[in-house]
Length: 100
Image (cartoon, rainbow, N blue to C red; front, top):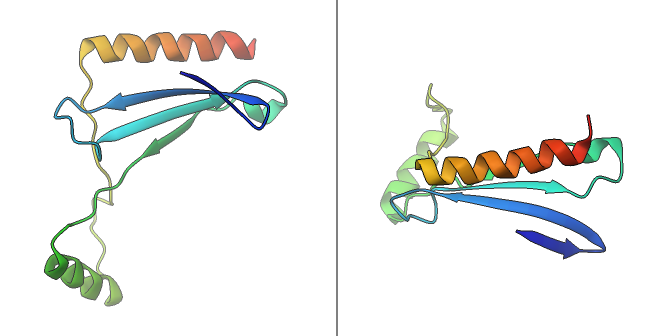
């Protein structure tokens, strides 16, 4: 997807998990090259939150007392072969546009 914001083109690709949960989405963005720093891809993922208020309070209490998961805070996105091919095409277009 090509979007023009503030006079600059943004190229965006979304990978949505096969389970169709919107919180399992990864967004890849790169910009129309203008400077050296524009040859980067930005990868954004949504980290899920607990909808149950009591669990959120419990997580907050654990956080206040310094609890950290040794595995970190992350989500996962599952891609099918069709989505992987679309991602390959997106990345190929990005690499070719940077002319490096």
